[in-house]
Length: 419
Image (cartoon, rainbow, N blue to C red):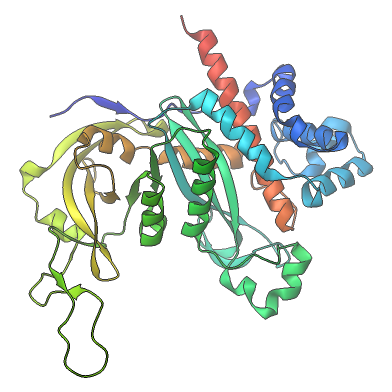
């Protein structure tokens, strides 16, 4: 039995209540991004908003933040609302600069990009992208907005990198044309699924080239999308994605052939699975058929919950693509030793990779969930009252910067405390 504790990422436990007296640190952090705002007023309001998000107050929408910082100033409230809702400043250069800062603080050649969704309950029907849909925060169907996010995790820590608002397909119908215009949705935008939104974010990070990364992790909402998996492979990244239990794979590559021509119509040109080739099996069927000797126990340090004891099995399998054999990948099976819960993953990591690296990567998805928790409970991530496309993305950009500040500050505190 392997009793080695495989560590993932340290827990971010610094919160706004720990930040008394660090305004100088915040000013220095803001100064890194300040040149990316074209006007002095924008730079000042960005600093104010960042400071507000880091306050220890119950709600971090614009009015209570400014009430704490400036007193009852209606003009300031209106101006800050305009800065966030429709301010003519670009998010992309700010996030690109953040990636360079994250590389300095957390960069690791074995770094993991983590994709996940996070939802925001909203009242009414005027906010961009709002719809009755499944809301993960509430655990039921409700009126909400759905976001897709990208995080980075390494042995040094973790942080959010990017965000996209998901627009439901009906938002692109003619019936929503006026609402799209009112919310400032870009005219060139078209319907994009959540997995493809996540791929676009990963592509931008890879193209920027400033943040070292090796892996991409996600839950089955992303792992069940073959186009995403193949897109990640084309970027020369190793994905480690949870997949549904009914995902089908082959143990060995089945025979394929072009069917013989019947003599009528067009000659067949597309490959099909040979008549005598076996059908693919579900991953749970493969798991059930493994001998006890195939399972190896490991212990992972996963998040604030402490060590997780589980047994793993590893199989090389052939993925299914449009009913035909696709790439050869790892099927990683993780079974909890406490309650027997089975998790199933696919990974395109190399055939000769050490099993311990696969085990460790299976425990690297929790950081993005902690980012959401800190963001919503401590940084006002869901407290926004803007309705526009630009406003949603502006707000999330500034929340991501505030989280990056906590990450940087915690790293410096830890360095100070080290003997």
